[in-house]
Image (cartoon, rainbow, N blue to C red; front, top):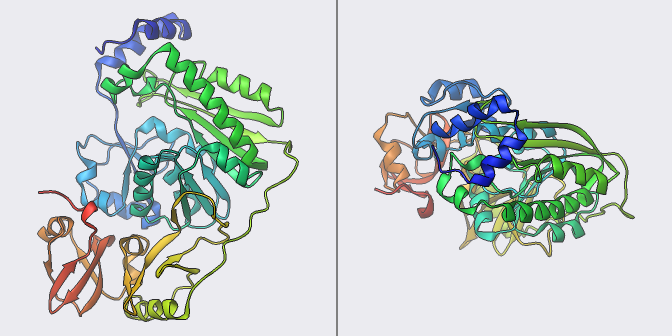
Length: 435
């Protein structure tokens, strides 16, 4: 059993009925649960299940969630292809409460590394706008990489504190996810050394104060009739039920729709808390009126891209093109003017114009399906070239010269350029497997 803090044990005995104590504390003698979520943006999930060897039982509260006993899902080529996202099973419970829909404006305010935000994006099916925010820039970079890997086209990734966003987005979003930084009691099994070392009653109090500030900002950004989901991975009442009570007292414009707490002795997961609210009235004096981003494409930049498009794709796409410094982007529909914000990603970075020619980038490859491309090297899982490609090596292939989409079972891994029967590898060096 883990060496649990005495005060934590005392708190949980106050919180739980006595007849549940033994079952709860016995959980810490067992290994943690692990899960993966399938990415429906990659296509039919039934086809995915047929090729993934590491899926176990389904997760009850997430239609695309599965338990797994695999040790290194992140080393699987299907992970590189954005087919799966590793996520603790009980952490999958909060995002479905929002019921994100196509065409909505959605915000995940504390998003890194991206579990709940990408979960919401999958429900939106590329339609509408989702802003994924992480104040800590290093963590925001990881978030942005996950957005790219999963092929999410309608996302803007920002790195701002909630107060800065609240000034720009008053009354703007239809749905907001606040997966707040917390004392992490639900991580004691999954990440024992770090979670136990950081736990203290003082930290619980600090977290509760910070959560209140974040929620206050979230309310400001929520449209009337919009919904807000709040979640933590802790059992501390001050951060869960107590936070909800204080939030409702401070914000009469909000009403509680639902609240649930998952304990590890009652579900197959590490534990989670989630609450769902609706904004029934407007308190702010003004609603958000954001300018849309202006389309800015030079004729040379668009001409170079369209030349590439005709050679690479089977048909022309109605991309909303935007150019900045020779780099071309596909913008999400209705995206706001992001001037003044620290932005890591807006839509899809398609590539850049060099010496009059368009050179595609990895994000473009991860945002398309194999069926849309003319030149595709589709490898099976047992083909030794899969691992060679993921290590950045050149491959032998029998394809026409030019840019090529490299796939595993039809799911994109990245780009290559074929010259005389050899595919030059264009997988970014930072994404390649070592060894």
